[in-house]
Length: 573
Image 1 (cartoon, rainbow, N blue to C red):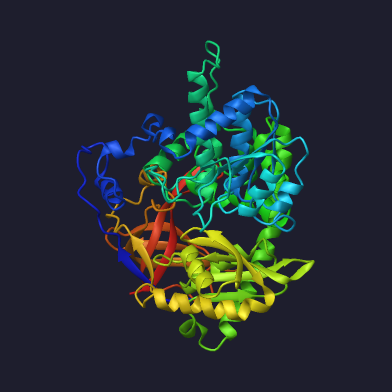
Image 2 (cartoon, rainbow, N blue to C red):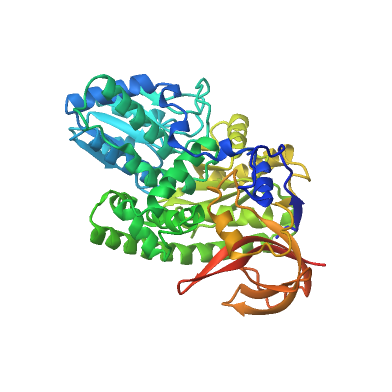
């Protein structure tokens, strides 16, 4: 693991207009995230960007409205991650609310169909399918859209991924990240784009007089799904996304969530009333993602579509079981990856762009391996596995990156320099996927490392943990922990507050095999604070005197709440 450097998060401006209602600590936290006054925390749905600002929206809703009027057979083509599953559920529920009677969905199996709307997935569609609506995919599906058009189908692509050199010949594409799209926020998740399409469709149908008095559907009922998919996909929580997520969280805390999400909350032993975004990202999202990684994401979508609580609990328990299997498999693969890195002579100094491949690895879990190794090495990492049991000649890779290194653009450079080396790729700045021939893996690994060396300097390769500074003496209270929990929503690009203080280790003990439970003394007022740190214990005691970076969290034990420090880093003083 590379050494970690603590840095104070700089303020991006001066707080203004808060008054006494917001503590100075929270004002400082907001100012470090670009929020300088109360109007920037008013997460009201009325302040959402308007759907009509999205390119292609007018054509998309006209096609959908016509399809509903003509009772056309609509197929939602989702994706096998949490964003794709929630997006498919939003599309299904929303179109039904708006009057569609013949609407169904498909989700590709990553081991059978590959990613997105592929020709293989199109070939599996029923003969009666007339209109395909992609969710969280499609902008790279040039061949798949061509196959659908050859069958006489119409195709609406809704996506948020970055486009490649060529766009598919769909009837219309709705994607805020198209090069010429003027939508002010580029951070919408796939589920967010689909929700926006439904908002625009409802407005269009309203103008057409499609709703009788008091029958206009309430699309806010879908916001719990939008919140889950948005948080789980790690898109930046800009102001627009924070509005969507906060509205969804309020529905869930108010007991108005769909049966499937409520069942997933129960299965993960979280509380509906105190639910926060980290619960979505670290407990619910992985359960849905596990189905797409190891089994069939239809399990996840069905969980989100059912309104029967008992059936939802059945799906949630099944998803939890698959997630346990995923965790075991991931732990084994990560251990093997760490062993590869450790056994390679001075690999940490030699490689900047790290590629890893093991023939026994599971293609559905390599993204998690890449993520773990990226965190520990602070280098961009791509992990590869065979594309399938019956296809050892091709590899699928999943890439994770660090700040300052746009991984999808890096793959584009490799592709331009070595035509034909990469068979297919796509993704974002921080995550991407690709496929290539097994025999080409060594050549790709060298080419990727070359680009990483050219683009990254030593400063960018220094792992940094940004903190919000010291907490004043006496501020580590349950009331402050509650205030911080609900002051977000926190997430990607709007991170949960992290503080750093000097402590003395009053007592400690191992917790499980790799975790620590500590009692830390604040020398300023002699107060003692309960603390935990995960996945760090190697048999050595923690420092007697330390500087610790931590989140102030709430420990809910048998219905009794108390403040707890979740340590992110500690170093001796």
